Amino acid sequence: MRLPFLNPAPSVAVIRLHGTIGAASRGAGLSDAALGPLLERAFRKGRPRAVALSVNSPGGSPVQSSLIAARIRRLAARHRLPVHAFVEDVAASGGYWLASAADDIWADDSSLLGSIGVIAAGFGFSDLIARHGIERRVHTAGRSKSMLDPFRPENPEDVARLERLMRPMHDAFKAQVVARRGARLAQETDLFTGDIWTGPQAVELGLADGIAHMEPKLRELYGDDVRLRRYGVRKPFLRRMGMSADDLVDALAERSRWPDLGG
Image (cartoon, rainbow, N blue to C red; front, side, top):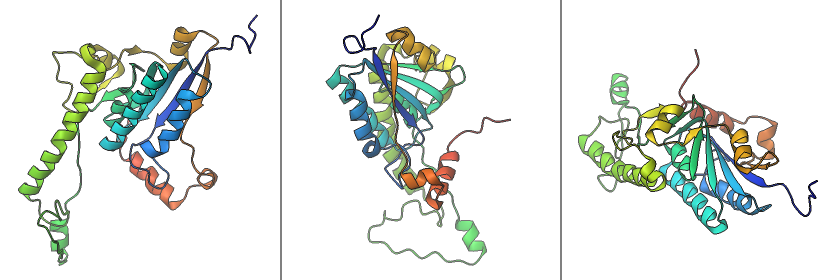
């Protein structure tokens, strides 16, 4: 018989990393500022045997992705705890950056992983406003201040400047994946094109370690009596009572980033 005070059941802290990644705005999304106290508490409280990341994110800010992943690694080193990532629907772009902070990555057969690249997207309205007789007036101090203005024709110099900005971001992403996955990565495939793969394909390429679901895998690793302590960013009280206009904007923005896998 187990005496709970003398020989307590092992516990694993489960951290929910769901949604888009971006600087804290209107209380939505994943950010280092919002997750920092939660991560500190999860690694410390109750002396867990390990930390599990529940990842379901299409990505977002490269800076916030880097900050969150770096914080996870610092805490793992400080508390000497293994970290396991479990991918649900998707760990793409910044979502995969977060998953790569773990010591091993597990996915479902139908999970989507990868998209190791950087994207900048927008719209061009110059023909539209010209058709309606609208004149765009912009005055700047500094010739690069109005780079990629959507109401002016695209300037090749602006595009080249943007590509120079994105290249080091892509390099940082690649360095993160290589540093964390190392020799597990397939050498004969270019993994950094922005392509995306299903769970079994990601395992074959070394981007994931196997197909497994969280609870069965953690019981396999830490025993059938393991306790899961769950942590996640909580919405403010008024948000839980109903959806505000800001919530609707956030929801629409997040929905636009997810692939539609329905029939």
